[in-house]
Length: 178
Image (cartoon, rainbow, N blue to C red):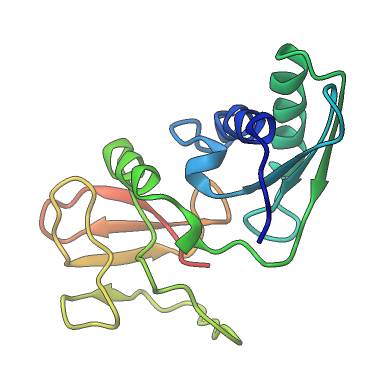
């Protein structure tokens, strides 16, 4: 069992309050990427940060923003260490984060739908989801309909797909399960 000091808990809360650079509606805590903060005395800390996927271009911005917030709080020496194991999963997004994604117009990833093991890649097929299609349908964040179709496997970022609701006809991003 890992013991967290009150100082580490406070600094973890501060580091977790940093907005995600690609989805500023979410904090890094809500996204689930800040794993731990280890205090090495009163003014030196190490932060463990797990990227949403290996090679995530936002990891540098996240690290810089965490360093800035902690230095503004009086920490002189901040080291942000990228930790790849255990790997981040969309199941790490908090319930609050999922709610905020929906309110922002992004369909959150389905809980428990993150693939385990090899991931099958399909190219070129447009796929429509129906209520009986797989573990859970991708619901429209605008009207809640389960009848949506995939327009593009990639959207504004690699972790999102572009979909359209067949009920209200609105396009929306879907945060893909990882």
